[in-house]
Image (cartoon, rainbow, N blue to C red; front, side):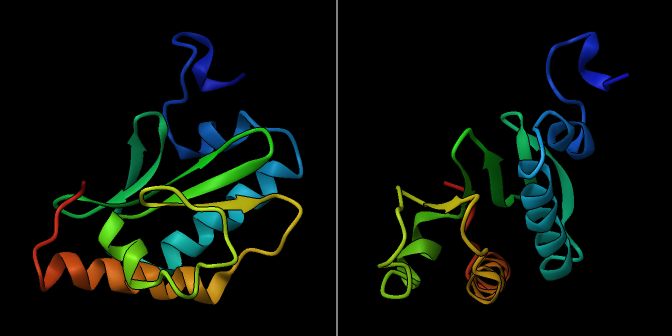
Length: 127
C-alpha cells in the first residue's frame, strides 16, 4: 500500500518515485542516485512535493512530469553553465531532462558541485 493513501501526496522520496510508472521510475531513481552520490552530506526530503537536497538551504530539486523530468538549481548555477546547457530546454533555474534521452551525469555532477560551493563559500541561498 502506498504511503500517500491518506493525504494524496507523497511522504518521502521513495513514495514520490513510486507514484510514476516504469521506465520513469528508473529514470527518477537514477537522478536520486546521482544526487546522493554528489551531495552526500545533504539532507534528502520533499520541498513543494518534489525531491530536494539541502544543507541550511535548498541546494537543488528534481521533479518528474509526463514527458520529462526537471532538475532545478539556482539561476546563478544555471547561468554559470549556460554555454554547456545550450542544447537543453531550460527555464529560470531548470533543465529539462527527457525520459528517452541519456541523463547528462557528468554535467549534473559538476553543477551540483558548483551549487554546493556556491552555498558554502559564497553564501548563495535558494532563490
